[in-house]
Amino acid sequence: MNTMIRSSAASAGLVLAALQSLSVPLPAQAQAVPATSVPSGYGRYCSLSYSGGGWAFSHLSGASSNPCGDMLATGPGGTIARAGLWSVSGTNNAMAVCNDGAFQVFYVGTGAAPATWAFDAAKGKSKCVITVSPKALPVFVKPYQLYTGSVATYNRWDFNYYDLPIKSTDFGQPANASCPNSKVIDKNGKQACWINGHGGYDWVMPANNALKAAAAGVVRKARFRDTTEFGGVCAQKSPQGEIYIEHSVGSGTYAERFLTYYAHAKAIDVVDGQTVSAGQVIGAVGDNGCSSEPHLHFSVQRLTNLTGFRSFTPTYPNSGWGISGIHGLIDPFGWNAPVNVDPWATRLIGQTKDGVKSPGAYSINLWKSGQVPAQ
Ligand SMILES: [Zn+2]
Image (cartoon, rainbow, N blue to C red; front, side):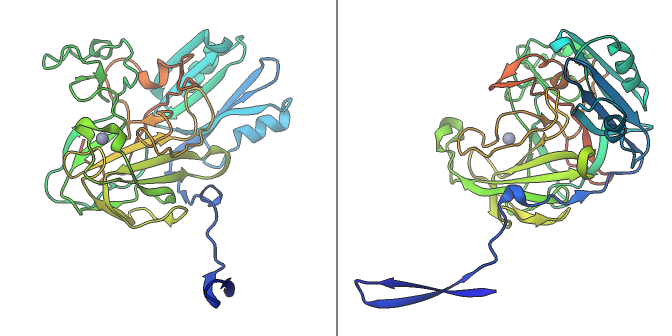
């Protein structure tokens, strides 16, 4: 539907007419995120908090089960502290944090076992919140065109984003003689030499290679951002092309939500609030902003079931890295070290960073088979 808008330019004595569409797009946050189907073999869990320090926990294997609803219907009310998915026959992480962080336990195991262990360990304690996370949730397709040349990876996600005093030997890996002073830890627990505090993967590929949506979602922000502030090695050739897409695996109370972030796009083919499908072309690889050669910087942020809180609403600042802190940033290949649990999920508990308490999250391997990008 169109409507005629009239305005007068008195000085020129003219009457101008313009056509303006009334189909104004919804504000970005109001746009519903299309649900990606939950793969088969995932159950649902719920951690409930009651006033006064009481709590309850339930994990059910049914794909359509309703552990929160069951407990809310039969108990004294309460609020949902965590609710999400767990793998019925695969590997899961589970943590219980009680007594305002004074009591913490972390488990990894198969199926229902780790959540049961966490629950048993927390019995009798106060203010317990149990967070469960599957090791894998295969829902993403490769975020770039299935390019036949080799794709080099020159930076990966840093599990020690805050430069905590951790070392590779904590995770069953030797020190790295090439960078003995580095505190950067990769997904295998190995000490790495790349830049400290890198929030995603850098994949080198030819300019103009297509960028693709990793899953169905809503574009929360698409822009070319001035990153002149970085200067130095980041002196920009032109403003940085950035695309942020929100995804939802399942819908409702138990949905696991993620935000993907694509940087250095030469071309952007989507707009704020647009719905995209999995694999849809959203832009093209470029070499702008803080970049030294054509590549895709790709990062994933968890928006639900973080270490310290149930959900997180991101913002898109024009300064810094353009993402609203590191809350919930994860490695989309998951945590695979031979020893010990995901340090990003467990070592920030009780710590406040950027004004947010316990901002860590469990990494998850999100790739569908046959769609795994370069590692
Ligand atoms: Zn990067």
